[in-house]
Image 1 (cartoon, rainbow, N blue to C red):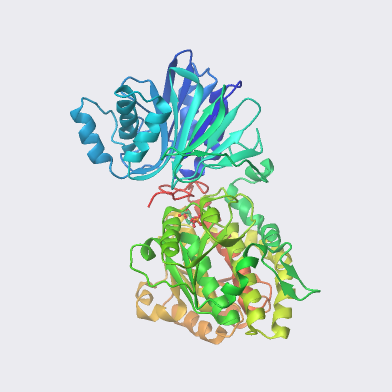
Image 2 (image 1 turned 135 degrees about the vertical axis):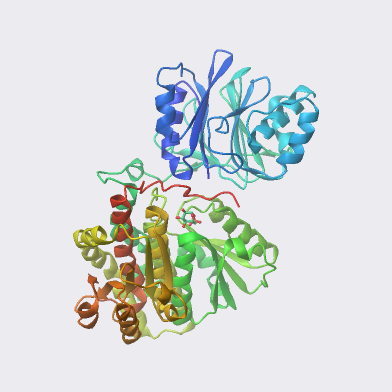
Length: 613
Ligand code: G6P
C-alpha cells in the first residue's frame, strides 16, 4: 500500500514523479504529494484525493527541480487529508521523507521526541520517523545517511522510505524493510519506486533493495548499498523484462476490462513452455530442484489473501483430486497469528499476485523458521515473496493494474492445475489417458475463453436488470464453490453491493432465509458430477421467488428452462471449469459497477498491494 516515486538527474523531476505516481495509484489513492528540491530549498505540495487533484493544485506553482520525491497514500495512521499526506518534513524543514509501511513504535518515539521539543503537524507515524532522523543528525557527528541508518535501527515495523535533504541537491537516501523498493539506474540519473512500473520507460536496469538495506544514491558517487547494521553490500543489477504497453489501457475504458479480455493470452503465457502434448509432459522449471521434495511432501499449505486465497481453494480441489496430496488453504493473516503445526515435510506455498502482501510474506517467514520448504506462485517478477521462497512458478500474466484481480486469478489457477498434473503424473495418481486428455483440454482453454468473452453484450444486458440490487448471492459446488466466493468478492469490491458466496447445499442452513423476489442468485451450474444436485438447489431458490442467473454448459437444457437468465460457456473437463466460468462473473461485476457509476479500477477504501498487516 502507498506508492513511492523519486528521481534525481538532469530531467524535470516533478513530471517524472507525477507520472510515476499515476502508475502506482493502484497502491493507494486517498491523497498524494511531492517534495521538489529547488536551489537550496524544498517545495512541498500535498493534496487530498487522487493524483489528478495534486496535479490541478500544483498547476500554477513552481515545480522546477531535478530532485524530487512523491507519494500516493492509503491511510493507516490519520485521516486522508492534506496534512497527513506525504512527504513529511523535519522540524527545520530540511529533511523530507516519503514512507510506505507502518512504524509500530511511533507512539513511544513521538513521546520522547516531544519531550525534546519536537512539534508535530500530522497524525502520522511517518512524521515521527523524519523527526527521529533529524534528532540523531543534529545531535551527533553522523551525516544524514548514517543518521537515517541509526534511526532505522530504533524503529519497529515496516518501511520503504526515500529521503531528500535541502542541503544536498545531489543525493537520495532510500531504505526498505518488509515494503518493496526498486532503484532504477539510468544514464547519470536514478529513480526509486515501489515497483518497476514508473521506471520502465527510462531504464531497464534496476536493483531491488533487500530487507534491511539502505541505499545512498548520489549523482557524484553513484549507488552505494549498506545494511542498516552498517555492512557494505554490492548492488545486484537486474534487467527488467516488462514492456511499457502492458501498463497502458490500450483502447479499453478501464484496466479491469482490458485485463478481463487479456485472459486468453495471459493463460497461454502461464502455460508457455510448461506443457507438451507430444511429450505428454508438464514441467515447471522454477520448482525443478524441489520436485522430488514436493512429490514426497506430506502436506501442502497454501497461504494467501483475497482473490489469491480463492485460487488456493480451487488448487486444494485440484491437488487433492489429481495428485492425492492433502492440502490446507489458510488466510495468511490467520495462519501467522496462530501457532500452526508445520514440519519439515510440509510445503508452504504462497499465492500472491503482487508478491508483496504483508501477511502472506509474514506467514512464509513463520513457515521458514519452522523448517518448511517454501514455494511462491507470484505474478510480479522479483517481488519480495518470489525472493523469499526456495522455489516457485511465476504466473506470467503481465502487470495487473485494476485493483480487482482478474487475470492474475485465472493465471494462478492455471499454474495450480499444471502443478497438480505434474505431481499426479509423477506419483501415478492420474492415469495416462486422463493426463493426456487434460493436456489437450488445457491447450484449448484460451480459445474457449474467447468464446466466453463474446457473451459480453448479453452479460451487460443482465447487469442492467440487476444493478440496483442491494444484495446478491453466489452459489457453486465442488471446484466451483470458490468461484461463488470470488464472484461475490468481485461484486462487493467494485460495486459496493453486499454479496455472499456459498456452497450451494449450505444455502439451506441460513442464506435461504434471505431469498425473495428482490434477490439475484448467481449460480455456477455447469454439467459436472454435481449437476443434478445444483439443479435441485436452483429449484429451491425458484420456489422462494429468487432470481436465477446461471452459468451453464453449452447445450444445457434443464437449467436453461428454470433460470431467469443464463450465460453459456463451452464444454470442458470439469476440473477446468474455473478457468472459464470465472470470466462471466468478472464481466457481470464490471458492468454492474459501471452502471452504478463506481470507480471500477480504484474502488473506495481498497488498494491493490496490501503491504501493511
Ligand atoms: C488486495 C487486492 C486483491 C488481492 C489481495 C491479495 O486485497 O485488492 O485483489 O487479491 O490484495 O493480493 P496478492 O497480491 O497477495 O494476490
